[in-house]
Every structure is written in C-alpha cells, then in structure tokens.
Image (cartoon, rainbow, N blue to C red; front, side, top):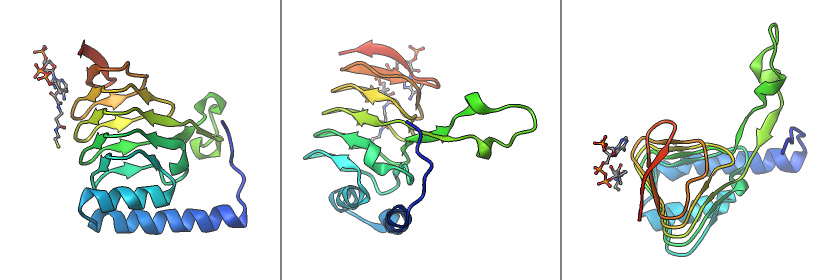
Length: 157
Ligand SMILES: CC(C)(COP(=O)(O)OP(=O)(O)OC[C@H]1O[C@@H](n2cnc3c(N)ncnc32)[C@H](O)[C@@H]1OP(=O)(O)O)[C@@H](O)C(=O)NCCC(=O)NCCS
C-alpha cells in the first residue's frame, strides 16, 4: 500500500499523533498509556497493556491492531512504514523512494518481550511469545515462541 499524499487534515492528524507520542513516555499506569495509543489510532482490545516506552509508528498508527490481553513490554518498536527500496538505484537518495505502508497485527494473548522490533506487514499469532530483543520480519504462528534477529520460532506451546 503506497500513499504519499498530504492533505490539511492529514497534517493536523499527524501533529495530534506526535503530541500524544511526546506525552506517552510520561504516563502511567499502562492502562492510561494504552488509552492514549487508542487516541493515536491504534486498535487495542480489552485487557491489553502497552508500556510507556513502546514506540508505535507515528505515520500510520491506525494500521496497528492489537488484540485482547496482549502485553507489549518496555522498549518495543512497531513499524508500519518503510521506503520502497525496489525503486532505488545509484545516484538516487533513499528518501526519494515512495513510502510503503503495511499493517501489523498482534493477536489475542500474545506477549512481546523487551526491546523487540516488529516490522511492517507482520502478524503475530494468538498466544505467541516474542523474545527480548527479537526483530520480527515474518509472521509468527499462534502459540509460537520466536527469538533472535531475524526472529525464528524455537518452540510452540
Ligand atoms: C523467549 C523466551 C520467552 C524464551 O524463554 P524459555 O522458553 O524459557 O527459553 P530458554 O531460556 O529455555 O531458551 C531457549 C533457547 O533460546 C535462546 N533464547 C532465549 N531467549 C532469547 C532471546 N531473547 N534472544 C535470543 N535467544 C534467546 C536461549 O539462549 C536458548 O538457546 P539454546 O537452545 O541454544 O541454548 C525468553 O527468553 C524471553 O526472551 N522472554 C522475554 C523477557 C521479557 O521481555 N520480559 C519482560 C517482562 S515485563
């Protein structure tokens, strides 16, 4: 999904999202932090908690959906956009390539360990556990435990 058009309403929305992003690190408990992420556009199910140091894409937080009873722990980053480097060639700046947007889904009951990075387009299955510091580049099946960079499933429940 590529969408690089700017409108007045998208600029105002972008400013609102970034103001909330600035406030979030100073909020607690996690329920309040989670509510502010909902205001940024992230879809978050009941009982889920997002730590105040989690960073969720500033460009399109609305592309992130988090199910019920998910725990997103400290320092996690969730990304929904990246440059389309298939357009890249010698003599071109990467920032001149279009932005690509892809949704991220974290299903019910999953647990995202400290400092994990979730890349655009990834779905993390129900009840899956992502190890501390993992870089998740591909879908993780339900009840899988994945660690490392790139994250690999080491066991399933
Ligand atoms: C992923 C995790 C759940 C696995 O726990 P476990 O099932 O007890 O796994 P083990 O400790 O038996 O480790 C299994 C293997 O994975 C490796 N491993 C475990 N966690 C890892 C991680 N985060 N990154 C890379 N490798 C990891 C171990 O070294 C071990 O490798 P080996 O088989 O070559 O010896 C756990 O290590 C983890 O990272 N939990 C998240 C912790 C966290 O963020 N806590 C926040 C609380 S708020």
